Length: 106
Image (cartoon, rainbow, N blue to C red; front, side):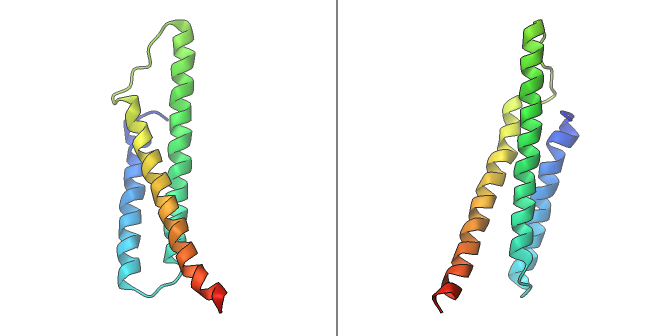
């Protein structure tokens, strides 16, 4: 689970997928693409949180035995997809609120 291709590759693939769907959303009139963007961002948050939690658990278990968690990347790099995902979720919630708010006034 802490393999760099898995732990960092999946969030990179999700960001690329998010960018492609965002581009498609700007060019088309498909209404549900905003919800798809929200789902992708939410999955990125959940995935990144799970990987980060696993890395911290492994690190704490290895610290008890005196060993060091040896990764091919710095552990702080696992926080970046989590932060990006949280920001994207907040942006999507704000977009949904702006879209629903004018409809509720009528």
